[in-house]
Length: 539
Image (cartoon, rainbow, N blue to C red; front, top):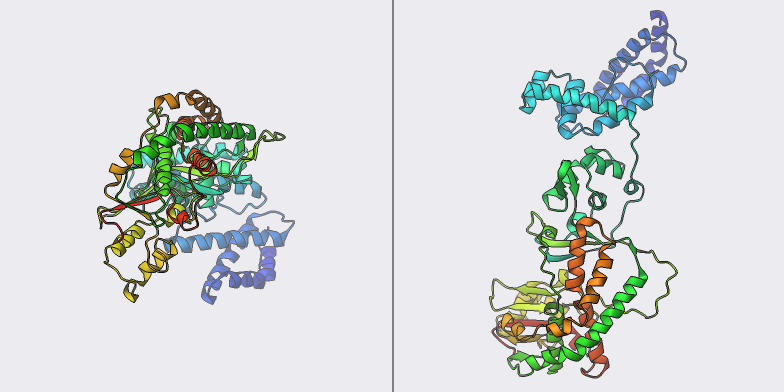
């Protein structure tokens, strides 16, 4: 373009360019500096161009591009992260080139590994020499050259390939709850790590097949830049495990999104059959084992509460069908001291639509055995299981070892209901562990917890043989709904946990319904299936 025509265009757009700079800048000095850079860039581009059909659009594209360079330069000198900045890919402003191609190049830079992306940025954007980059990163010059050559290859391949957004990028999963088996550590259970929706979907993206960082990013419809730190966080805390080929897998137990209602019902029926056998043949053995136990306090004086708790404990802890497999690889060990198997509950969809159940299935949810001890008072220990037979709220998160320390201090006369102990008494009344008139409202056994639990018999082999093969059959069917790396866990959990808290709840229903035990009162539901152990009983 002729100089005279370029001068006319600059004069025509000078005020608009300055207005653009004022809106973008934080001060008038900065606006003038930015404006001068834009004018220089526009003038240089006009002189090099032949014919331009859309002058205004051309000028604003140059303005935006110059502004991006200006901001990037400012941020670089201030030491701000460059991960979100736009990289310039051309030495001249040939805006006739395809903008889409430039956008794809920018995207592909983001798909480079962190180290390679850093080198590319320093070389092309900061105009640093190979030697300068080597000095900055404390790596050999040859390594910098190799990364640059590989980056060119990666970028060329990336631009020509068609990247697709995976299912999780379009329809991310949402958890309906979390569970754990083991010690949650100081940061709570898996909800602390997976409550973040992106973290959850990163973990789920590798559940059915191992994926590299780049493949995870593509599945989520993101660039690796945005998930690198999250992947490292999940790996450092055991939720992601690195496998061959620098790929990741996970041993989180995600509940299947598809289920068979017929399989669920058949499992329920089998549990009911087993519960009938246990109620008839095992429950009497437990009652006989604890019938002469004397060193205890029961608020209502109803000895059946102790018998029921002993039966529930026995079924939940001494009736498993062991497979003897090493399941340690499923233990997630977090940096906060957690050591547990993590479960994520997902919304389920019935895959045998049209199947009509023949029985009404009760809600037989019950938490696992919760134990609490005290370093302050070594004799203090508790065991409990929450279910619809108990009125306690909050399950493990509301079951604090301090509650039992407070009870111990109360029954030993170490605290009185005064202002100084207001918070302790408020907590005990909130949990209903003491009544409004200061009576202890939970069962307490004097002595060592292990001595008591040792009295409770295990389920005999003769009884187990009546249903062991059927349990294994169900376990194999359930395992098919899970990916290969999870099937050992599901097999063991299903077999070893088939006779657990759900069956225990069914057994208790039978014993309450057939008159073996009297129905629980509201007061008794506070301590139903809760036992505290210490060296003192309430007076």
